[in-house]
Amino acid sequence: MNPLLGHVLSVFMGFFAIMNPIANTPIFLGLTSDDSVEVRKKVARKSVLTAFVLILIFTLMGRLIFSLFGITLPAFRIMGGVLVAIIGYQMMHGSASPVHAHQSGEDGQDLEAALSVAVTPLAIPILAGPGTIATAMSFASEGGLLEMAITVGAFAVLCGITYLAFIYGERLVRYLGQSGLSVVTRIMGLILGVIGVQMLIEGVKGAVESLGK
Image (tube, rainbow, N blue to C red; front, side, top):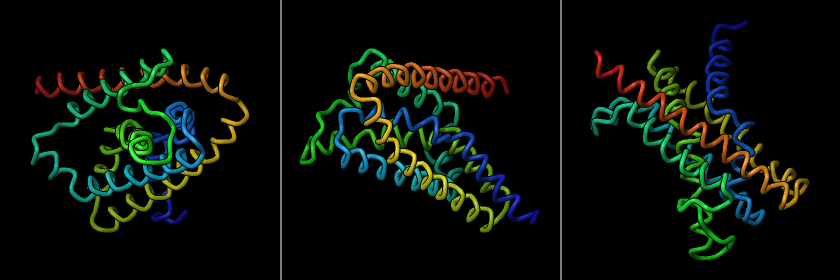
């Protein structure tokens, strides 16, 4: 295999493993269960675009941003973990988290509230969380402009795949019905809560290790 092609595939699979659009699709469906088809499409589009822009910024200027604001990766993981755990807890109990409490609508504040889940928690920290950011910064730092281009390109392709997975997940909504989706939402709430706790544990572990150095 061509070494360059092998490297591109390696970067793509690294992103795919940590971002996992297949596992994130049920979470997307749970967070948008009360939304219309059009709103769900807008949420999907905004979430992947936001995640892409964030990874692009961190690929180009990640280390500068972290040092400028005095941010550490463990702190990022801790905050992201707390946020995701809270949202998962609310979903598990069938109630809306304040970050995505809304009525499905197409106009004004209803639409703005519905689209808020696209940024948090979908884009940040589910799609472009600490692990994804760290992976992008690691790949990009291995070389010059070519490495940055490969990193950004691989993530762009993955964002496209994720968008398609979210959109065609609508078929699952129609198949399950409202009661079935309610069950999925609670199960995904449990999984989301566990993901949040795991992020929190990794953040605390990283913080403790950094203090010990």
